[in-house]
Image 1 (cartoon, rainbow over the protein chains, first blue to last red):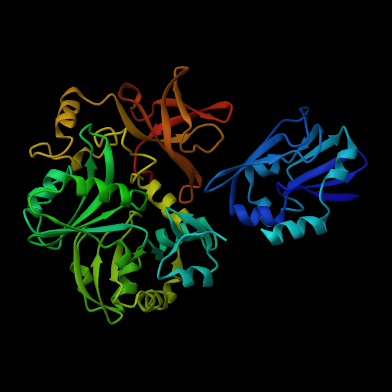
Image 2: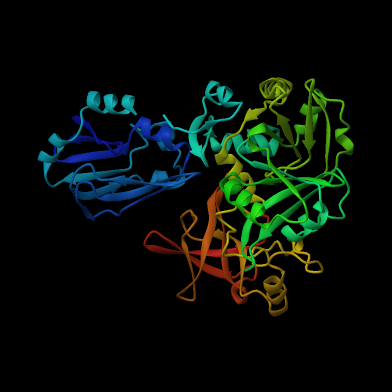
Length: 123
Length: 360
């Protein structure tokens, strides 16, 4: 499994041609309590960098972007009832959706964990 | 690192882990730990806000009482010393320049407390309209303003002062020693809870007072509260926020604060407001709750019967109710409690229902 990060604070964990997508620990801390999550629907195809959903804190709505291109094959339904799961476990149970990658080469353009950490440290 | 003015309490915001933003030129915390926690602390116990960004003006001398009555829509000429009134200040068009608190300091002396976003605009507006030998002074930079709000706020302050807080009624103020410093204490706030605001001049030690309040409040789990919770607290009580719910394009009658407009005296904007009162307003600010999923936000459109009919002025997830709430303008004929409206959220229209306000 490979885990990669985006400059817009998403992570993707890829196994074969399927990737689990979420927002990073850094992003959930910045947002504060998440009170609403709305993701695009299963079966939709998305391009890398396209908006795949929105996460709302008390204060504001923030877009989430597709780390890679592909088809949405699963959405984390539990977040509808319990959006704060993202605050509790952003990198685990607080995952947002799964994408079947249409162009795995795109992963090379994403950040490694080390590169991402450096980015967030620089602020 | 954000740039901006630091209040005299800035070091505490950092110490308590505040997420600092530039708010109208001031470096202030949007939250320390969590907006919901801070919100609930104020509703259930007590919280402390640094609201030093607010502007303060002194109007004195000349015919100050008559001048104030002409400047603002509410009447301040007949209030006793020690009383506060809330009032819009209007343009000739009836649109709102700002909403403010007016303190009667002396027979011929008032303090106006205005929104940080409008301090410069208001200063200019008032100066342009000065007459009758009034002296105008902007004392914003001299004042540190601490709000202590929540059902336990009196118990906290009681430990620090001999001021008779029990007999200090809502929208009255007095002066006295708090934590050994001579300050002005008013029973006002922007949360809808029991609460006090402490006006501290620069010759007094604001940090000392702040620390004493935090200390005295520790038995009630007092919390420092940021701008995020300040917004959700006022919104649940339908207190207007300038720039969101009211502005130069809306009138006090439309905003549902017609009680602050005294049409039996002369003031700037009276003619238009008198006409509007006689003819009736065409739209009005209402509160609504969502029937479908989504959180309403400032600027979203409101649809009624398939047509764009208004807009959302404020919206959030209400921490007390644990559900989304919003305020917005709708046509008067569609403004009844229970009326169904639609909020345009991103590319969807989501059902909502007009409800009684305040929300709690």
